[in-house]
Image (cartoon, rainbow, N blue to C red; front, side, top):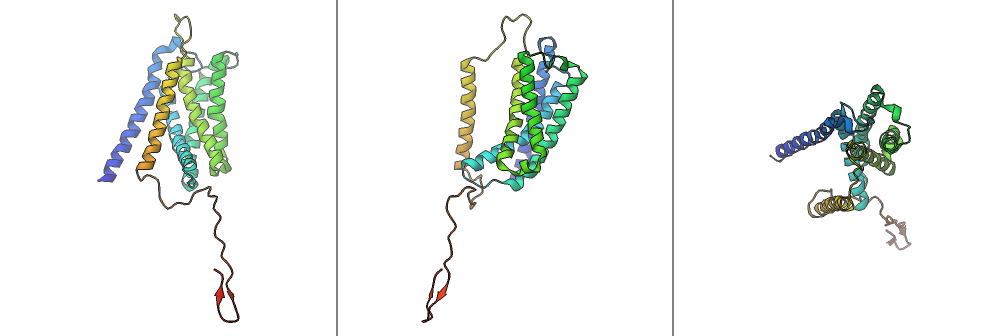
Length: 241
Protein backbone atom coordinates (compact mmCIF):
# COMPACT_ATOMS: atom_id res chain seq x y z
CA UNK A 1 0.00 0.00 0.00
CA UNK A 2 2.78 2.39 0.95
CA UNK A 3 4.67 1.65 -2.27
CA UNK A 4 1.57 2.41 -4.35
CA UNK A 5 1.06 5.73 -2.58
CA UNK A 6 4.75 6.58 -3.01
CA UNK A 7 4.59 5.78 -6.74
CA UNK A 8 1.54 8.01 -7.16
CA UNK A 9 3.24 10.86 -5.31
CA UNK A 10 6.38 10.50 -7.46
CA UNK A 11 4.37 10.57 -10.69
CA UNK A 12 2.40 13.59 -9.48
CA UNK A 13 5.60 15.41 -8.54
CA UNK A 14 7.22 14.79 -11.93
CA UNK A 15 4.11 15.82 -13.88
CA UNK A 16 3.53 18.99 -11.87
CA UNK A 17 7.19 20.00 -12.15
CA UNK A 18 7.26 19.49 -15.93
CA UNK A 19 3.99 21.37 -16.40
CA UNK A 20 5.15 24.19 -14.14
CA UNK A 21 8.43 24.89 -15.91
CA UNK A 22 7.17 24.43 -19.46
CA UNK A 23 4.27 26.76 -18.65
CA UNK A 24 6.72 29.34 -17.34
CA UNK A 25 8.51 29.25 -20.68
CA UNK A 26 5.23 29.51 -22.58
CA UNK A 27 4.31 32.58 -20.54
CA UNK A 28 6.99 34.68 -22.23
CA UNK A 29 6.13 33.67 -25.80
CA UNK A 30 3.62 36.52 -25.97
CA UNK A 31 6.37 39.06 -25.20
CA UNK A 32 8.35 38.66 -28.42
CA UNK A 33 8.89 42.38 -28.99
CA UNK A 34 9.53 43.10 -25.31
CA UNK A 35 12.40 40.65 -24.81
CA UNK A 36 16.04 40.58 -25.80
CA UNK A 37 16.79 38.35 -28.77
CA UNK A 38 19.39 36.53 -26.68
CA UNK A 39 16.64 34.81 -24.70
CA UNK A 40 13.47 34.99 -26.76
CA UNK A 41 12.92 31.89 -28.88
CA UNK A 42 9.89 29.88 -30.01
CA UNK A 43 11.35 26.85 -28.24
CA UNK A 44 11.58 28.64 -24.89
CA UNK A 45 9.18 26.14 -23.21
CA UNK A 46 11.34 23.25 -24.47
CA UNK A 47 14.51 24.88 -23.14
CA UNK A 48 12.86 25.43 -19.77
CA UNK A 49 11.82 21.77 -19.68
CA UNK A 50 15.26 20.48 -20.72
CA UNK A 51 16.97 22.54 -18.04
CA UNK A 52 14.67 21.01 -15.41
CA UNK A 53 15.94 17.48 -16.07
CA UNK A 54 19.54 18.57 -15.54
CA UNK A 55 18.90 20.72 -12.48
CA UNK A 56 16.62 18.13 -10.86
CA UNK A 57 19.41 15.58 -10.53
CA UNK A 58 21.85 18.35 -9.59
CA UNK A 59 19.63 19.50 -6.72
CA UNK A 60 19.36 15.93 -5.38
CA UNK A 61 23.15 15.51 -5.45
CA UNK A 62 23.90 18.93 -3.98
CA UNK A 63 21.29 18.47 -1.24
CA UNK A 64 22.64 15.04 -0.33
CA UNK A 65 26.20 16.37 -0.09
CA UNK A 66 25.06 19.35 1.99
CA UNK A 67 23.12 17.13 4.41
CA UNK A 68 26.03 14.72 4.80
CA UNK A 69 28.39 17.62 5.49
CA UNK A 70 26.02 19.38 7.92
CA UNK A 71 25.29 16.24 9.94
CA UNK A 72 28.82 14.83 9.79
CA UNK A 73 27.79 11.76 7.85
CA UNK A 74 29.47 9.69 5.17
CA UNK A 75 29.10 10.97 1.62
CA UNK A 76 27.09 8.47 -0.44
CA UNK A 77 29.39 8.63 -3.45
CA UNK A 78 28.47 5.09 -4.54
CA UNK A 79 25.03 6.54 -5.32
CA UNK A 80 25.88 10.14 -6.27
CA UNK A 81 28.66 9.32 -8.75
CA UNK A 82 26.41 7.23 -11.07
CA UNK A 83 23.62 9.80 -10.60
CA UNK A 84 25.92 12.58 -11.80
CA UNK A 85 26.06 10.91 -15.22
CA UNK A 86 22.43 11.92 -15.75
CA UNK A 87 23.36 15.52 -14.96
CA UNK A 88 26.13 15.30 -17.56
CA UNK A 89 23.81 13.87 -20.22
CA UNK A 90 20.93 16.30 -19.72
CA UNK A 91 23.25 19.28 -19.26
CA UNK A 92 24.97 18.37 -22.51
CA UNK A 93 21.66 18.12 -24.38
CA UNK A 94 20.56 21.45 -22.90
CA UNK A 95 23.84 23.11 -23.94
CA UNK A 96 23.53 21.77 -27.49
CA UNK A 97 19.91 22.90 -27.82
CA UNK A 98 20.54 26.37 -26.40
CA UNK A 99 23.68 26.98 -28.47
CA UNK A 100 22.09 25.66 -31.68
CA UNK A 101 19.01 27.82 -31.17
CA UNK A 102 21.19 30.90 -30.66
CA UNK A 103 23.11 30.24 -33.88
CA UNK A 104 20.05 29.34 -35.97
CA UNK A 105 18.27 32.55 -34.96
CA UNK A 106 21.54 34.48 -35.56
CA UNK A 107 21.07 36.12 -32.18
CA UNK A 108 24.77 35.74 -31.43
CA UNK A 109 25.40 39.00 -33.32
CA UNK A 110 24.68 40.95 -30.12
CA UNK A 111 26.60 38.57 -27.89
CA UNK A 112 29.72 40.74 -27.58
CA UNK A 113 28.26 44.24 -27.78
CA UNK A 114 29.10 44.97 -24.14
CA UNK A 115 25.50 45.57 -23.06
CA UNK A 116 24.27 44.38 -19.63
CA UNK A 117 22.17 41.77 -21.42
CA UNK A 118 25.16 40.30 -23.26
CA UNK A 119 27.29 40.23 -20.10
CA UNK A 120 24.63 38.43 -18.06
CA UNK A 121 24.00 36.02 -20.93
CA UNK A 122 27.70 35.14 -21.04
CA UNK A 123 27.73 34.66 -17.26
CA UNK A 124 24.77 32.30 -17.56
CA UNK A 125 26.29 30.31 -20.42
CA UNK A 126 29.89 30.12 -19.16
CA UNK A 127 29.42 29.64 -15.42
CA UNK A 128 26.02 27.94 -15.53
CA UNK A 129 26.39 25.59 -18.51
CA UNK A 130 29.87 25.13 -19.98
CA UNK A 131 32.04 25.12 -16.83
CA UNK A 132 29.90 22.56 -14.93
CA UNK A 133 29.61 20.52 -18.13
CA UNK A 134 33.40 20.47 -18.46
CA UNK A 135 33.77 19.50 -14.80
CA UNK A 136 31.27 16.66 -14.99
CA UNK A 137 33.06 15.10 -17.96
CA UNK A 138 35.93 14.21 -15.60
CA UNK A 139 35.47 10.97 -13.68
CA UNK A 140 37.69 12.40 -10.94
CA UNK A 141 35.23 15.25 -10.42
CA UNK A 142 32.27 12.89 -10.26
CA UNK A 143 34.03 10.82 -7.57
CA UNK A 144 35.05 13.79 -5.41
CA UNK A 145 32.40 15.14 -2.98
CA UNK A 146 33.90 18.64 -3.04
CA UNK A 147 34.30 18.92 -6.83
CA UNK A 148 30.95 17.27 -7.52
CA UNK A 149 29.33 19.72 -5.11
CA UNK A 150 30.85 22.65 -7.00
CA UNK A 151 29.75 21.26 -10.39
CA UNK A 152 26.15 20.61 -9.32
CA UNK A 153 25.94 23.99 -7.57
CA UNK A 154 26.99 25.68 -10.82
CA UNK A 155 24.25 23.79 -12.67
CA UNK A 156 21.72 25.11 -10.15
CA UNK A 157 23.22 28.60 -10.47
CA UNK A 158 22.89 28.43 -14.26
CA UNK A 159 19.18 27.60 -14.16
CA UNK A 160 18.63 30.30 -11.53
CA UNK A 161 20.40 32.84 -13.74
CA UNK A 162 18.36 31.71 -16.74
CA UNK A 163 15.07 32.33 -14.96
CA UNK A 164 16.23 35.72 -13.67
CA UNK A 165 17.50 36.72 -17.11
CA UNK A 166 14.36 35.63 -18.95
CA UNK A 167 11.89 37.35 -16.64
CA UNK A 168 13.91 40.39 -15.51
CA UNK A 169 17.02 41.04 -17.63
CA UNK A 170 15.55 40.26 -21.06
CA UNK A 171 12.12 41.80 -20.49
CA UNK A 172 11.58 45.50 -21.07
CA UNK A 173 8.35 47.12 -22.17
CA UNK A 174 8.79 49.71 -24.95
CA UNK A 175 6.71 52.16 -22.90
CA UNK A 176 8.59 51.64 -19.62
CA UNK A 177 10.82 54.48 -18.45
CA UNK A 178 13.04 52.29 -16.29
CA UNK A 179 13.93 48.63 -16.16
CA UNK A 180 12.18 46.60 -13.47
CA UNK A 181 14.43 45.80 -10.52
CA UNK A 182 13.12 43.81 -7.53
CA UNK A 183 12.70 45.99 -4.47
CA UNK A 184 14.57 45.43 -1.21
CA UNK A 185 11.44 44.05 0.47
CA UNK A 186 10.90 41.54 -2.36
CA UNK A 187 14.48 40.31 -2.06
CA UNK A 188 14.22 40.00 1.73
CA UNK A 189 10.93 38.08 1.49
CA UNK A 190 12.44 35.69 -1.05
CA UNK A 191 15.51 35.07 1.13
CA UNK A 192 13.24 34.58 4.14
CA UNK A 193 11.14 31.97 2.33
CA UNK A 194 14.23 30.07 1.22
CA UNK A 195 15.62 30.17 4.76
CA UNK A 196 12.29 28.90 6.12
CA UNK A 197 12.37 25.96 3.69
CA UNK A 198 15.93 25.08 4.76
CA UNK A 199 14.93 25.27 8.44
CA UNK A 200 11.85 23.13 7.82
CA UNK A 201 13.96 20.57 5.95
CA UNK A 202 16.41 20.40 8.87
CA UNK A 203 13.59 19.98 11.41
CA UNK A 204 12.06 17.15 9.37
CA UNK A 205 15.44 15.38 9.23
CA UNK A 206 15.74 15.63 13.02
CA UNK A 207 12.18 14.55 13.83
CA UNK A 208 11.50 11.79 11.30
CA UNK A 209 13.66 8.69 10.61
CA UNK A 210 14.69 9.73 7.11
CA UNK A 211 18.46 9.30 7.29
CA UNK A 212 19.99 5.87 7.85
CA UNK A 213 21.22 5.05 11.35
CA UNK A 214 24.37 3.31 12.55
CA UNK A 215 26.49 5.17 10.03
CA UNK A 216 30.02 6.29 10.79
CA UNK A 217 30.71 10.02 10.33
CA UNK A 218 32.86 10.96 7.36
CA UNK A 219 35.07 13.34 9.32
CA UNK A 220 35.34 11.69 12.72
CA UNK A 221 38.20 13.02 14.85
CA UNK A 222 38.34 9.96 17.08
CA UNK A 223 41.24 7.63 16.48
CA UNK A 224 40.62 3.92 16.18
CA UNK A 225 41.62 1.98 19.33
CA UNK A 226 45.02 0.36 19.10
CA UNK A 227 45.19 -3.29 20.18
CA UNK A 228 47.94 -4.00 22.69
CA UNK A 229 50.20 -6.98 22.03
CA UNK A 230 49.41 -10.14 23.95
CA UNK A 231 52.38 -11.09 26.10
CA UNK A 232 52.72 -14.28 28.06
CA UNK A 233 54.81 -14.15 31.21
CA UNK A 234 56.74 -16.97 32.72
CA UNK A 235 53.82 -17.73 35.01
CA UNK A 236 51.47 -18.18 32.07
CA UNK A 237 49.54 -14.95 32.73
CA UNK A 238 48.63 -13.04 29.58
CA UNK A 239 48.77 -9.27 29.40
CA UNK A 240 47.68 -6.81 26.77
CA UNK A 241 44.43 -6.45 24.71
